[in-house]
Length: 109
Image (cartoon, rainbow, N blue to C red; front, side, top):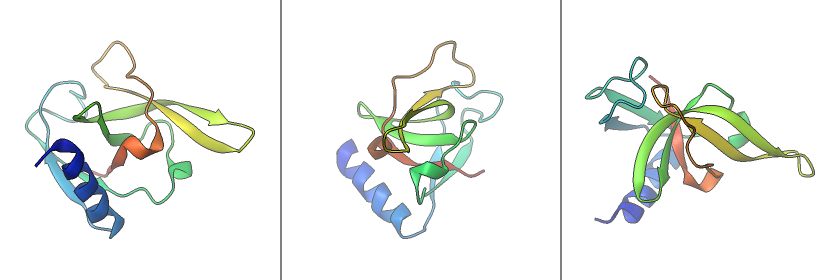
């Protein structure tokens, strides 16, 4: 199954208030989430509820990752959150901006 199809299935599962578990590979979140550990992802009802410090599961450029929200860019004309800036706790630079449709859910454990 290709990654895009898998992403759509994950979104459907979460939409029904279920949770998804992933095994972590990599050290980007070392100290918070250790390599080889399991994380649980829950749906986000409204991106307006996302706040700085939350850890989001994201699908971007055919890759899955879970990084912390370090900034939120607002569209003040619409009073909505438009873009999220994420960064792995163990990384030196921020990720490319994430838009709401790339967000799988929020890490809950």
